[in-house]
Amino acid sequence: MVEQAEFAVLARRLGDRVKGFRARRGMSRKDLSSHAGISERYLAQLEGGQANVSVNILWLLAQAMDTPITELIEAEAEASHPDLPLAKKFLDQLTPDQQSEAYVLLRQNFKRGLKLKRRVALIGLRGAGKTTLGEAVAGRFAAPFRRITSMIEQMAGMDMTEILLSTGQKGYRKLEYSALENTLEAQPTMVLEAGGSLVSEPRTFELLLQSCFTIWVQASPEDHMRRVMGQGDLRPIAGQQMAAMEDLKAILEARRHLYGRADAVINTSGRSIADSVEEMSRLCAPHLGL
Image (tube, rainbow, N blue to C red; front, side, top):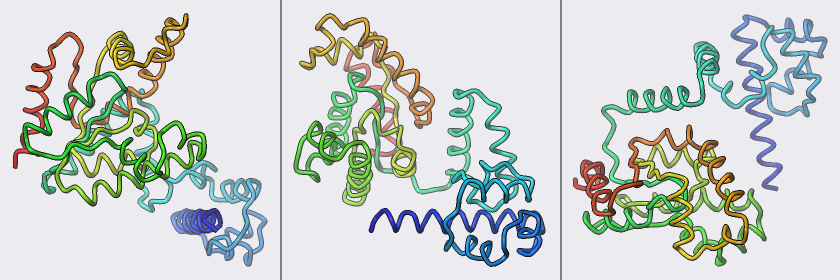
């Protein structure tokens, strides 16, 4: 039933996109059906979200409207404003780092005047120092400290390993979103430690960015590895240190532009815990010190 409901939503969105592009082109339904070689009745069903659509049908429609088929398929095409495709084409020409910078600038520019967030969220890989700094800063401002992974385990009634084995990534991501949503609703003020991979799930990460002042807690790959092993995770030791380090560097590089969307950054490598706590406290004061 859930899958059918999700499919129905996707079908309606696709219909809305086709209708929007047709209107933008100034084409009547009759015109489009004629140019695409598709019956007008079927096109009406498609635009109403009632038709099963093949890639071939989408290709014919895209050709008839002289628009890339990806514009019909991609979720970003849902918005009807004609400037959106132009903005997307411009962003596509930028490097991943430049795209992240542009995203942060847009968020900062258009959130001016909005109510100051009273929640702080820490993002970054395990071993960066999120828990240590988060607990210290939360204590300083008498704010609750929450870990999203703990909330997920509490909801599921099992630990992370069991969750992933029983539900897979799809089930875990649904739990993660629900846990974040519930925590945000329950805590108007808090310091939240996000899981390292949360940033890879667009819907969940966007909710976090909209609801919290976010800080990317950075560290060098070597410090990440050393601290994780210091916490008792000895998996990299069994003759696999080099492979584990390469994997860690690859993950950091792949997520760098996502972590870069945070409102602020703090690097914990080469500095004392006290120094890092002081800097994070200064960043958090406008939000937690209200």
